[in-house]
Image (tube, rainbow, N blue to C red; front, top):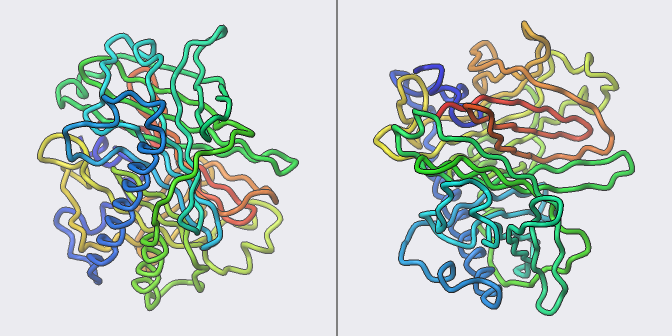
Length: 391
């Protein structure tokens, strides 16, 4: 049970410090939590604006739902104020509007994705994705600007039966994620995906690349809370003891189930390293991680014995590359106390001059489990950790 709890979503092992019987954190983080909530509220408003903009292609049943539940959403932001961000959400609110007892084929001709490419200005571009049955398998048909021809991209769809534990806990969860692949010539491809856990039907996973060359539909939305979120994190971290100065602003990943921020250190060795071996033992940056309750029931799977970490705990960690028992690993230590190791997680590491800062997350399903694959990237360095999930 403890093993399952510590592996539920991404690096829950990181949250063991300060959870359960441990002492409270040294600094109240309520302002940061409020800034997170405000950012997600603005992201929800951006999704609402996109839904209104695509009213000509959306069924009325998805546009108007009698629920106050927030739309499921994943938001990626921001290396600097001029960088583009990405939001992925559903054009519907929970509960998931369509039954999926027989797997992906029950979702054909249903709208699954709203993708918003965000800018520093209030004008953003949005895309709507429907699952279709193509000649050679599944496809996602993307709608963009009014009057523009739609673009179809190939989709992969996998599914499995829910596990006995998912059935017992009556789990129905919808999660979005994305992966960006950078090629040797510097070009990139971004894939988005939706994972649906349904204890009454199938666990379904659909992955598709975003369309190339399709003009997005312009929407107006304010996302001013995102810069404020980074400023609040900087205010909290500024006076903390750390091995190197931090390089601001951070990369953010915001989801309904957890939030993650990556703040690289200004460590000269990171810039000068030409081999992975030169990075072993080096402190890479700070990590902020906050788990949020999204599953049904009175427990939230944070720490041993499923104990919730309240928001005034101190989920700030130092990230270091080490040589583990099974190869390279990312080690998390308490910020300001490098001798207090919180977790050591096996990782794959690569060096690539085309790599820039950012965070990717992939939800994947196996025969009887889920996996979450997190990739954190610094300048020319990329680290990937895969964590088995046991809901």
